[in-house]
Length: 173
Image 1: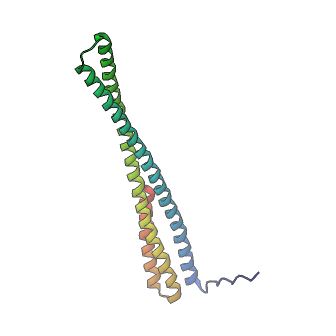
Image 2: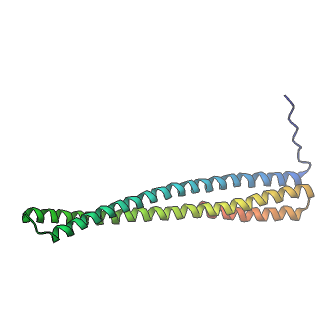
Image 3: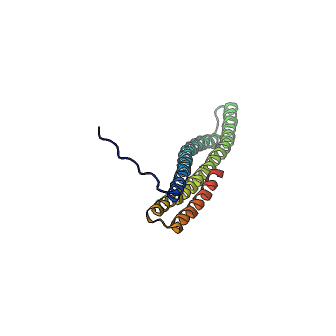
C-alpha cells in the first residue's frame, strides 16, 4: 500500500490563524447545510401531507355534491311513500351539512400544512444563502494563505461574518 502524502504544517502563526478560521467556517457551514437539508425535507413531507388533505377535501366535496343532488332529486319527485321520502330527504340534508363541516376542518388542516411548508422552505432558502457565503469565505481565506495578503484574509472573514449572520437567520427560522 502506498504511503499517504504528508500534510504540510502551517509555517507560522499567520497560516495557523487562517487554517483555524477556515476550520471554524467549515464547521459552521456543515451545520448550516444540515439545517437547510432538514428544512427542505420537512417542506417536502409537509407538501405531500397538504396535497393529501386537499385530495381528501375534494373527495368530501364530491360526496357532498352527490348527497345534495340526491336531496334535490328527492324533492322534485312525486313520492310513492311520502314518509320514507321525507326521511331520506332529511338524511341527505344532514349528510350535506356533515360534509360541509368536514370540508372546513380539512381545509383548515391543509392551509396550516401549507404555512408550515412556506416556513420550512424559507429556512432552506436562508440556509442556502448562508452556505454560499460561508463557502466563498472558505475559498477566499484559502487564497489568503497562498498569496499571504491580510486584506484578502480579512475580506474572507467579513464574508464569513455575513454568512454566519445569515445562518442565525436560518436557525432562528
